Length: 138
Image: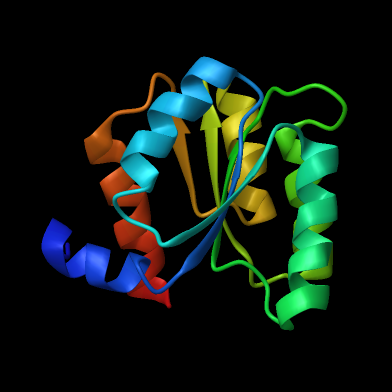
């Protein structure tokens, strides 16, 4: 496992799409993420995220390095949004966040290609572990 200082060297060069409908969770999580990433684009639901995902490629000819998404959201949930993103870019690194412990849904997410699942309320250590997984497979 890469130590935090070395991990931040990697993540600072990455761009992140963060998708969360709950304003309080979004604000508190952003406090953590802003210390690790220079470029963060925020979406409040899956529909907004998909539009931003497509626009990112149109604007810079590159997809986001990492997508972090809540699973339970209005308009388009994180599961369906992730399926759409993986159809667009099968190599996309996605981390899902959920407050629920539905083992069947967790298995579906992992089988679909989600890199890691973080249980809410999120802990700093779980986020670091998830980013470590991504950095070591890049």
